Amino acid sequence: MPNSLFAEEFKIETVKQINESGYSVADVSERLGVSTHSLYAWKKRYSMPSSEMLTADAQAAERRRRFCS
Image (cartoon, rainbow, N blue to C red; front, side, top):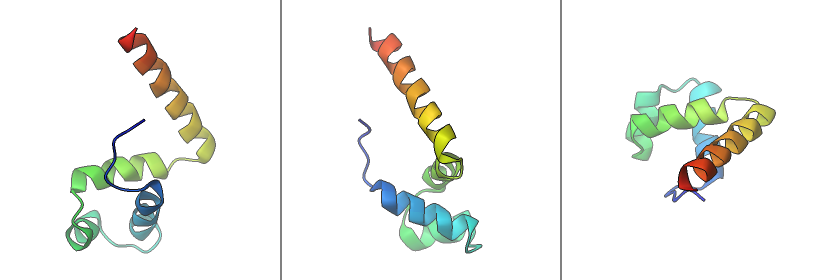
């Protein structure tokens, strides 16, 4: 399980500010105190359809399992 400082709902709402409300990544970063790197990663993850996100999560878990075995 990832060690995250931010709840998933916070990340989703933050991405909505960028995608739906038209705020720039830089504006949201400055306003919320979150790095632009994190925001771009969240945007990439939470902008994809749910089915793709589940597939990506499963693939990442499999890679971790193989790497740690």
